[in-house]
Length: 91
Image 1: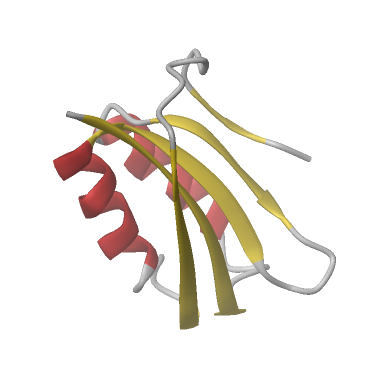
Image 2: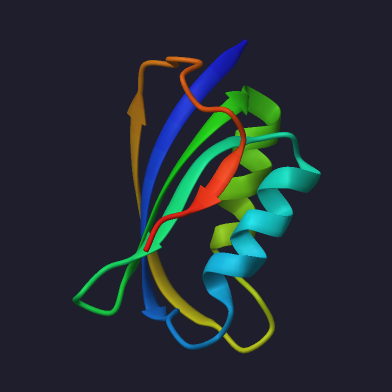
């Protein structure tokens, strides 16, 4: 079963390679979507893929890369669209 999850990750998540690490993990898990920094210091992402893979991606977001200090991950489940062609970092 495929799913779509929209996340907002807060804490020390900018300037710690969060976006690049998210992209690497998403590619490893065969997840499509995007990730970007927000002006308020948070990171936003959309993940689409198999439910178990997206669940693993969300679990990873709760820790993040080595120097991140994740405080919270807000989740919103959406309808799978299949509209992404890979995983990208939005600027």
